[in-house]
Length: 216
Image 1 (cartoon, one colour):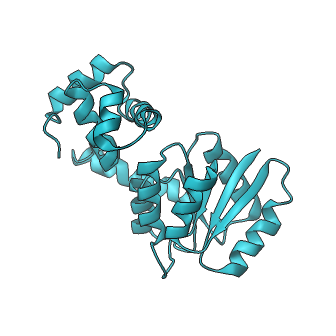
Image 2: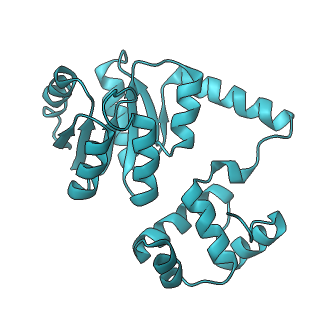
Image 3: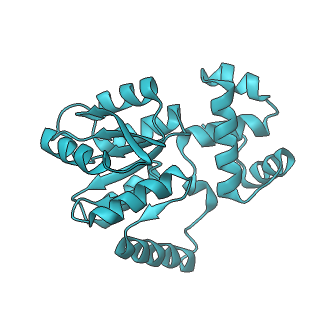
């Protein structure tokens, strides 16, 4: 069963999503939030598998800010952006904020269900035209020599890379950053995957080579 939290400032949208999703045997809507602040609070309280997050919420934190803060605090919770914005800037910002997927509100119901199941299983999901645009952007940056692995890391992940490279244990990192040891371990696993590394010595060597030891 996929535990889902819906965060959208329009009550009618939340109601419609609940009606749609309640009919799925493998998805349970465990809560609703009306803004980013409430979304973060409910996510930490209810521990959903997926947060379905709107981008534009005038009151409180917007979806991008809420996604970034939630992923720094609870990286194990997947965030799926559901928005009306078919826009490259929002798409790229959502990805950099840590979102696992991006779906348009105009998408067919089946696509939304597929996206929820995909991010819940640990995969990423982008609507088809977004995938093409993202790949084109990445290839262009590669041709220009601009794309580097560190750009895929969140600010919290960069902090952890620095601490690992300096020889701190998971417990020491957790104490210094005021997070749990489990959160440190989750961040490290994500970092290793993003950088294509398998062991701590490899990460230390990579960090030293890139000059990340003094990252602030």
